Image (cartoon, rainbow, N blue to C red):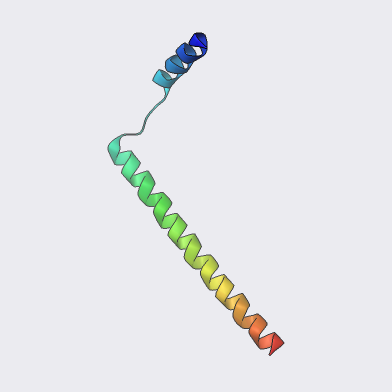
Length: 57
């Protein structure tokens, strides 16, 4: 177990962590993408619902 934790510690030192500015940009990109996809699927769902409403009367 100790060897495992030492190896984990050694590997974590090799990780390239993003800067604060990069992290902010990445976070904004993810949030905008999620909002866009949510709106897109909301519109598609609304369209399908309206089409089914017209078909079934």
